[in-house]
Image 1 (cartoon, one colour):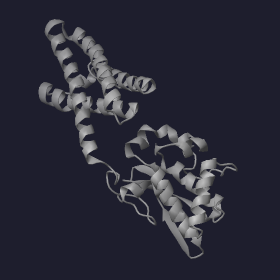
Image 2 (cartoon, helix red, strand yellow; image 1 turned 90 degrees about the vertical axis):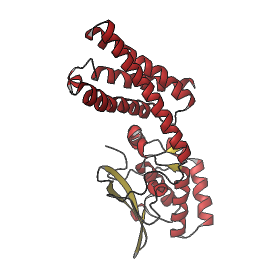
Image 3 (spheres, helix red, strand yellow; image 1 turned 135 degrees about the vertical axis):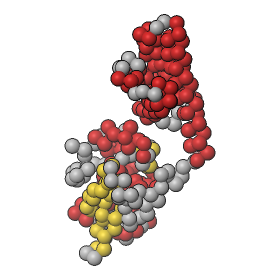
Amino acid sequence: MIPNLFSKEPLPDNIPAGMTAAIRKIKQAHPGKEDFLRASYLFLATKYQLKRLQVISKFYQLFIKDLDWAWNKKGHIHCTTLNFLLRIMLVKSGLFKDSDITIRLTSTWFTMAHQYLTIRISDDKSIDVDISMRDYGIPFGSHAGGFRCGSGFAKNTDFRFVRRGVMLFLLFAFIGWAICAAAMGLGMAYLGLRSALLLHAIIGPLAFSLLSYVYFKKYADTTPFETAFLFLLFVMIVDFLLVALVINKSLDIFREPLATWIPFGLIFLSVFLTGLLSKKSG
């Protein structure tokens, strides 16, 4: 069961000293309930960001219950953890009871589970709070759901950096795919089909491992899992559209594990492990 997704986890008795100080500071400046809620919302929305791709690639972080880890974390954080932090801030302020806070579940694009909170300010007023979607254009007092999911990119996205990153990624992915294609072509010309497939299954992962090492050291803003997934996706798409449909005019290569599925798995594994080793050494 994912903590805080369907029901409320018990609030801790002890919280990090930095969190206590933040609550005290916000309450001194904003002693009213709605003002404190809005200020806490802005504080957490500034401290953390939800990154759409990392919702999948860092799925395992949904199960982490360590409050010190969550409070000291930077960058991406899941909506459930972010809402748990807000619950703590509201209740520990003394202005709210936990019964004033209701967990709401919805979905984004009708495919991905998403959570927001409804906060009772008074008997006749409640406010929806969706902190994780603020950077995507969902304002205070509203929430994402269905096709109403805000913009595709966070509002502070540097599109020059995005374009540069996409071009670099495509370049590295194409070079890796081209080396795979060259190994297969040379193997077919000089070694025969079976040996060519073996050569392709060895050279491809080695090439992507070397390329990903350079990519991680100099350029990558993606995690090892994300990079491995995206490199593999590029290879699979090109193999399907160019090799299968245009060159071979047949999908038979996908029926031969040594031609596709084994190299696919080895490419993913080689990039992922290279990323992990690069992060540790770097």
